[in-house]
Length: 61
Figure (cartoon, rainbow, N blue to C red):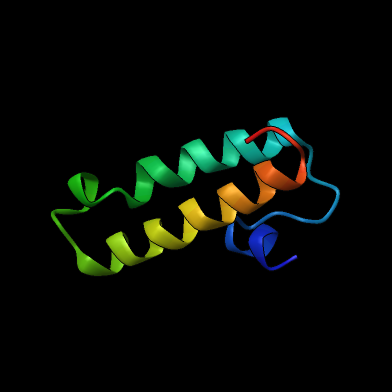
């Protein structure tokens, strides 16, 4: 549940929805898109970790 919250999704989210949301968040929080903002970089680390957990859960690592 925590990984879904990081991505801003509910527990009914499909793998396709997770992938789409992940791609969107990576684009908006990538340090290159935020002038090297350290906060954006920290959020990106959390987003990547959440995505890894969710794809493992769905069996699509």
